[in-house]
Structure formats: structure tokens, C-alpha cells
Image (cartoon, rainbow, N blue to C red; front, side, top):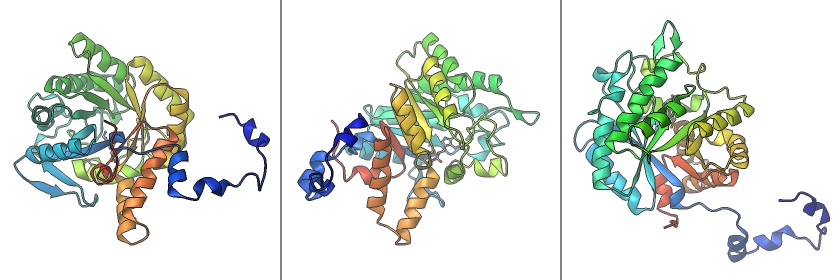
Length: 339
Ligand code: PBG
């Protein structure tokens, strides 16, 4: 867009901005962005067992699902034109440990879920987080030693976790841990082990946000984490130039796609990244954002359907190629696809 055109434009009444808003047909014609079911990624929480769902109290309408119900939901998502799901395990406390070794166990809940879902719905993309927080007794994303999260040792085990997930059949590994150098290490290991087609969606600009609260309840890491925070590895919400450096590094290290997270409070960052990089950028409408919209609608403050559509088109307008949202199913039900 050339900024000087506006100064060349005639004024009122030759210009009446309302002319292009007067009827649905012309509003549709001049619309700059669209929201399609193919823009959406559905996050799902997995638990062990059969035919069981557990509501997540802080996430209205979201349940933790056993693998059979994950498959059922995956089929629904696929039928609605949603291209991919993001799976998160809610691991039994008995399987959590100081080093989170269950994260790279080949028979873990997440690996079993990936194998079963891939077999049942082969054309649905599967994205899995690479981070230790669902598996550690301290709730951190990395290894914790002498009061610190140790970077390089964490990267070594994240590589093992990523390889295990790729082996199970996961299409996209999504490092959400914010350790330095992990994307390059994971990419090298994937290449060396023949997983040349496994995609990396890096949580490149992930902020230390209060809006992850309900997610931490869902995977059971909030009680482990207690009063601790993740500010030594997740980004300071005051920074945006730093986000561009994070993205540049992850792209150089071999990320195929990058993410900005949370979404709504960071639309400027999504926009900056989309403007400066050719790599596809994704937004995560995180658990706290989703919960706020649900609760506002429940209180009668605004219409739920319109609130979700408006919040999601904002991500597209900012330049996001796709959006992770807990509302993906209900929103996609009203949208055209992009077959
Ligand atoms: C874990 C992870 C988190 C989210 C996605 N992966 C939480 C955190 O970093 O503490 C948050 C998602 C959400 O709030 O919806 N590494």
C-alpha cells in the first residue's frame, strides 16, 4: 500500500466511505480478509482410559479426552475442514518425574494417541508440543538444576522427545519450550534419522503470559509450578524487536512455520513477523483468551459466535496464516473451507 495515495484522494462528498458499506453484496466484495475452516487448528487434551471425558473447569466447554474420543473428535474436525489438531497430554502424576523422562518414552500416552489418530484419520495433520512441562514434577518446560533451567542439557532431551514423536507418526513437532538452539538441534536429528518430512512449527515468540493459566490446569502443570514462573525462558511482554530476532533464529535453524503466542494481546508482533518474514506465521488464541470470551458471552456481555469470529479474523488481518483455538469446532461449523 502506497501511503501517498490517500493524500491524492478527493475529499467529501466525492469520497463517501459508506458507499462500499451500504449492502451485504458490496461489503463482501471489498472485504480484505476471510476466515476459513482451513485456517483453524484444534488443540486437544488427551488422558488415559476408555470412553471418558473430564471437563477442564477453567476452560468452559473443553474436556480432556481418552484416545477413542480424540479419534471421534478428530473425525469431526476433519469433516469440518480443519486441517490439523494439536495434541497435549494430561499425564498421570505417577508418571511425572524430576527430569520428565516420560516425555521420550516410546509408549507414552501421547505416542499412543498419535499412532491411533494417524491410523484412524490419516489425512488430519497432527501437531505435538516439544517441552517437558506435562511430565516434570516441577512443571517447568526444561531440566531444573540448582535453581535454574539448564539450556543445553534440556535441548538434548527435547531432541529425544521430538524423535520419539516423529517415530510415532506425528506430522509437526512444535517446540514450545523457548530453549536456545533447540530448533537447529531438532532439525539436525530429524534429518539424521530419516524424518526429512517432519515439519517444525516453532513457538518462536512465546511470552511469559498469565493467559496460560487454564491450559496449565488442563495438563496439570499449574499445581506443580506453584508460584514459580517461566520468565527466564519465555519472553518479556514488553518486547517486540526481540521477537523478530527469535523468529530469525528459528527460521535459520530450520523451522518451517513459526508461532506467536498468546494471540490477541500480541497482534502487533504477529503483524511485524508477517511483514518481515516469508515464513508462515501462526497465532495461538490461548486458553485464557478463550476463557475470557466464553465467560463474557456467558455473562451476556456480547454474542459468543460474533466474539469468536471477530477475534479470529483479527489474527488473519494481522497477517497470521492460521490460528490455534479451542473454539475451532464451533467456529468451523459456520465457515466455508478451502479444499
Ligand atoms: C507448554 C505449553 C503451554 C501452552 C502451550 N504449550 C503453557 C506454558 O508454556 O506454560 C499454553 C497454551 C494455552 O494457554 O492455551 N510448553
